[in-house]
Image (tube, rainbow, N blue to C red; front, side):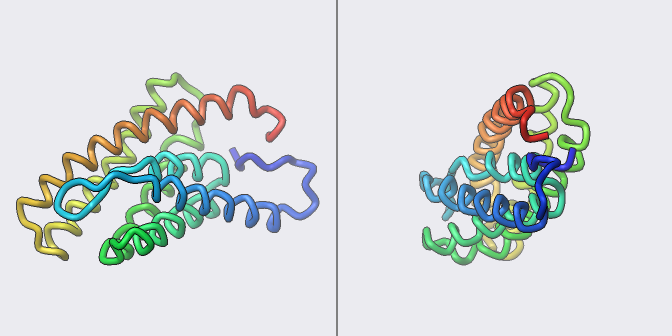
Length: 174
């Protein structure tokens, strides 16, 4: 799977860059639509776009476009302290998502959702480590992890559904 780009495209690099920029913007917007929770974080649907980025843009482009939008959203929302962690976490989630799901994108909705959920566990673990060790939240890191688990489960289900729709009806992109 090389992404959603048509084979007949003359300049694939320019098109991949443009589509990746669109997905970075989508990640930014879906992260901005958020609800504050926990000891300083928020819940949003940005992770659904992070997971879709890997599928739609392919490996390197998908892994790079997702963290930019999410980290910039952290700064805009006033959570700049999370921006470095967000960049690393979302980069890792998108890269693992591409390897775990997109290379073998065939399969059931439930199987894909479970693989996406496993990728979201990276997000939960990454933010837990950052909250606990870097920010020194102690038990607050566990509290934030509960909301991160909820966000991860919802985003895994949403992104799995969208990837299924893209895969089923997006034949023109392959």
